Image (tube, rainbow, N blue to C red; front, side):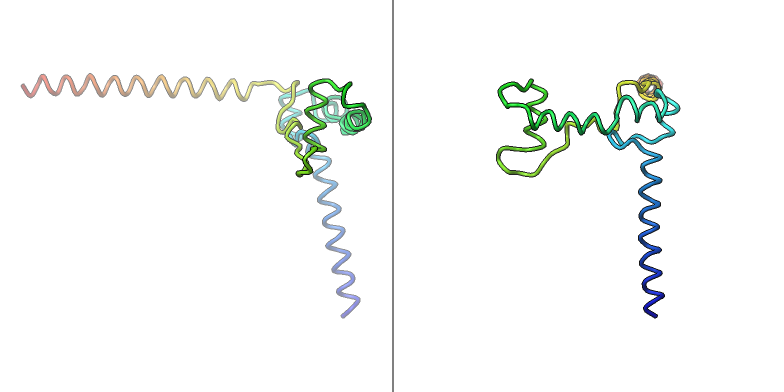
Length: 143
């Protein structure tokens, strides 16, 4: 029985490890965009992860911000320092991370969404105008 429990525990650990490895291979650690979206609309997943959102760059930036005297920090550096290591002792915030966005991604999806939205609005306007005109005609017919 004990052997079965041990084997089951190790199997669960292996599953968690495999899931974490798959997640690393399928999503950008920094922005959390998936491989497919970056390959289709951006510069490619591998290039994005190694050049644009390399986790080492963020790590070195945090080391730089932490070690540099506060008086010599730029505005952006001071902002990140205040978010990651707040002076009031509250919890760290990583809101400065570029979540679900990147500079090199094509905005084609957003542009397509905007076109569809504008077309729907125009159609709604035309339908509302058509109903108003129909009501006018019905009123003149009944009088």
